[in-house]
Length: 117
Image 1 (spheres, helix red, strand yellow):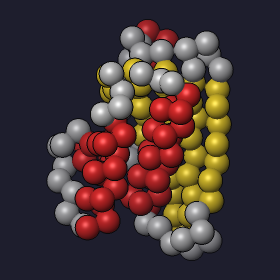
Image 2: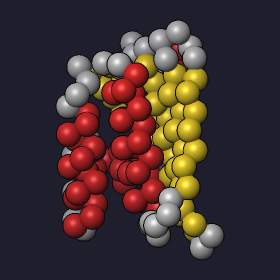
Image 3: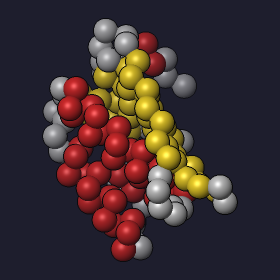
Image 4: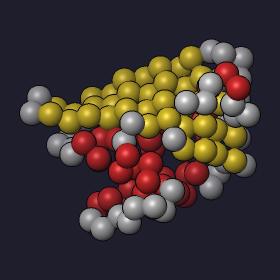
């Protein structure tokens, strides 16, 4: 596995979402070029699948990174589905998933460069 410290990207975004019978939510951690960490945990007021929670985490993280002025971003997600849909390796088929993917791609276009893992 590549050492994160050796990355050419100065901004890093770690996202994770989850859903269970008790509710759903997401967490994001943004690391700035100075090494500061911005952390946020969210609990959703709506029912969400795991994939929806993962997308909500990604979208929230991207929006915060944009607001902070990030222009190049390395994104880490443990969701194989979300990562591969963003990379166009998996096709989004459900209407809500297509909508999430469209929003994610629109937000990603605001960065000069990004990598998602």
